[in-house]
Structures are given as C-alpha cells and as structure tokens.
Length: 588
Ligand SMILES: [Zn+2]
Ligand SMILES: [Zn+2]
Image (cartoon, rainbow, N blue to C red; front, top):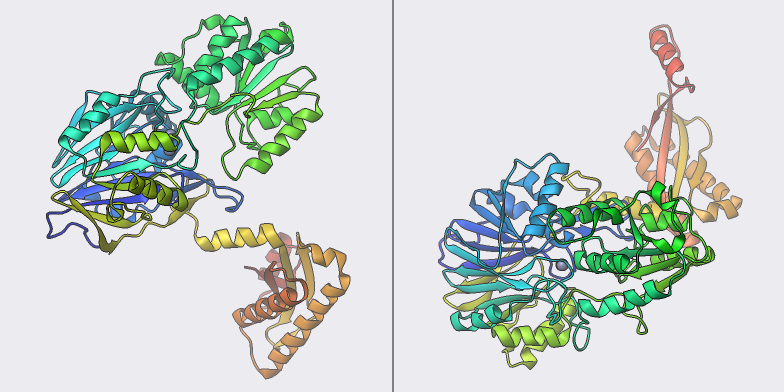
C-alpha cells in the first residue's frame, strides 16, 4: 500500500477499526514521517463466526509503514480499546504506549501473561500530561464512563486539532472523578478542526442514567434478600463493583469472588486504590460454608451467558463451590450485548428452575446503566466543542449516520460530516477536511486462540457449513492401476439430519456417485483431484436439489495397493500401523 502522505503537507486521519461496528477501535493520524495511533482494540467472535475467539483490525498498512509509527495512545482500559495490543506488538514495534493509570495496569497484566512486557514502554498519562511526538502534540481530558480513568484525546497537528472523545457519558453525579467540562469547553478557544465522537447510544433518547442511580436499587436487593446474593456484572466496571462492595459492608455480607477476570480486576483495582474494602470481607469458599446464606455475597463473571463463565457453571450445577438453591437471589447488574440475548435467557431459565430469584435491569429497577452518552449528551458534547468537522466513530453504520444527522440538526453543514468505513482516509489541509480518493486495506482478521496469523475466510466458511448443515462423506474405493471402482461408493454423514430420516436419500447418493464415476472411468485415466471434484460437485448439487441444504461434502478416496514381493516389507509395516492393509487413504 502506498504512503498516504508522501509529497504532501496534508495530515491523514483514518480508522483501521471502530467504524461500522462497536469494537476493535483503532484510529490513526499520519503526517510526514510519523503515525500515531489512538486505541488498539479487539472484537469478540459471536455465533456467526464459529470458533473465532477474536476479531482484529488488519495491521497491514502499519506493518508496511512500521518505521513511521511513533506511539499508541489509549483512552481507557476496555477490551475494545486495549485488547489488540499484544497482537499489534507481535506485528510491529511500538516505542511507547501512553495510557491512563488503570488501563496501564490492565495492559501490563496482558503483556506479562504473554511474556511480552519488554516489547514496549508503557507510560502513565493524566489530565496534565502533554506529549510531543514529532509534529504531534497530544493532551487529554477526563470523561465519565463505565470504567475509571477514561480520557478524551486532543491531538495538535500541523493542519489543525483532532479530538477523540473516547467512550464517554456526561454523568453529573459520577461515582469517581468528574468529567472535565471546563477543559472540553475551552477547546473552542483554540478551535477543533475534526472531532471523532463516539456513537454507541445515539439511538437512546434523553440522558443516560447516572452510575449513582444504580446503587439505590442494589441496596433494595440487599435489604430484601434472605438468601445468598449472587451478582454478575462486567468485571471492568470497577465503580459498580466498589459500590456493591460498600453495600456488602453496610449489610454485613462477606464476599466471594469467582471468575478469572473478576478476581484479577478486583485484585488490581484494590492494589491501585480504586476499590477500598477491609481485607476480612473477602473470604474463601471454605469459610463461606460456616456462614448463613444471608451473610454471603458472591461476585461472578458470565452475565452474557458465556458457557465457561462462573454464572453458567453455577446455573448448570457444575460449579465446584456454589450449588444453586431456593432463596438465592441472582442479580444481573449488566445489559445484554447484542447477539447474546438467547444465551442469557437460557441462563435465566436454568437458574429459575433451581428456585433462584433472578433480577435483571428493567424499567422497574435500575440494576444497570450504560457507560455511553445518549442523544442529548452527544448534542451537548457537539455544542461544547463546536468542531468544524465531525467523523462519528464507535458505532454500527446506522448509528454513525444518525450521529452525522444529529450534527446537521445542530447546524453543521452536511459536507462537514463524514460517515466512513474502516480504511477510508480523510485529509486535513490547513483547517479543511476532505475525503481522499485513497483507501487502505482494513478487513477483519479472525483469530482462533492467540495465533496472530489469523484464520482465512475459507476456514470460517467451512465452520459455518459444518455448524449449519453438517457433513456428508462419500467413500470411494478405486483400483487406480486398472482404472476402475473396486466397490460401489458408500455414504456416511454427521450432523446432516436428512440422511438419518431418509435411507432412500443415501441410496440415491450412492447410486449417483457410482454411476458418475463409472462413466468417468470409462472415458479414461483419472486423477485423485478429478475424482474428488466430480464427487463434490455432483453430490452437492443433488443434495441441494433434494433438501435445500448445503452440507460439506467430503470425498474420501481409498486406492488399492498391490501386494508383491517388491513392496512386501512396506505393506507389512503399514499393516501394523493401520488395520486396513490394502488401502492408502487420501483425505481432504
Ligand atoms: Zn468502547
Ligand atoms: Zn469503553
């Protein structure tokens, strides 16, 4: 990919992730010989991407221009902003990562787990930090969000100021630090050329509920519960956890913590002073056995119905220490991430079957609030900053578009709003911004486990086929020397329902394969590849016509091996290893 800013004095701004999606945020600013990156997130796979653990941005452009990358700046410690860092560091060298205190702790922890802590320098920033990286001067303003230590970023470039809000809401009664409305308003004085503002809750009217509003509902739960209280929440929502812990102390309940991320985050947050609680309130499962149910609070992970998480294991009666029982109150202090609703409902049903009372966020009880700005707050942010141009970020396409329309309602010209896709490039030139002709590669990269190389889309397609329609194997025995079928082909299937119900269909497929191959053999010598392709094409078409299903068709070809004196020893060895002595098996 060519250099975006070669032979020009313009500044390029583009996203490698975060546009058209809520996840894997990664925004880049390039000028002359320098690139700085704002955030480096991941997205998680869902049921539409079987076996995919993470989705990453495509780092190709950065790899090609690796010598230009000066620094990475982090707005806050959520996975969609920091989760890509280990993968990015495996791809390119980043001299410095600047991040708020809590995010620094999370990043260090991540890199230590991967034994990568020496790959980069992690530097803590706060409201007063001003960092100069070549032509860029970067500073920060505090915001309120569902994790402590969230910041917006101000980047002074040779062609104007770029501001990213990061994730925010305007919480006037926050649990932690206030949003710095004064600094935000003062941005008008120097002028903001381009604002990147988050769009997650653009579809929500009014204002997002304050974090403080949640706690009175949580107190009601503590007041009324007669059995154990089990609370599931996002493990990074440190303020929420702190408030619940304070309630536990107030209502004299001892605390158990289950789930790796929850244990880790509580431990880190206590070390850093974000969570304060007397030591003796945290107990072991063994100690819990000596207490009454109404003296116990259990924190756990798994509010999205993740099958391996603590909450799912409790619901399935498979948790080592917690068996669900009548009287237990399970609180989902969380919201459903789109796509997880079915799993969450399954979890709630399972818990209810054990006689457990399940409480979720509803209009009647404020057990959760979002960390993202609703419509009126997004308006306020636009009014306070008064940018010349807006590029909505952190949202699916319709959200980005609604955000652009919102800015137009507030008087911004339509051609000053940019609803873009990952890989689109904006050029800033002395205070003006326009869409460039250039586009850079910014596809999704799928990761299974921790392998940065990614999985190809072909693998994903195979997995989808298998999970939707199952597999049909066609076993063909041939005698390649004499160019003929040894026996009639036979069909096996896994996960393809129609076959079990319909022996007739199997016989038809076998007959079809037999006929087609015999005709082919009659025409002349065949290669393995020809046999395979013929089977795959004819059988797939036939099955689709009969059933409207597309199972994966796998031809398995067994070739006859001649016994003779010359290769007897070879055959004997083979016989010991595989029982089928007459065949060499060739598979996909
Ligand atoms: Zn985010
Ligand atoms: Zn966030």
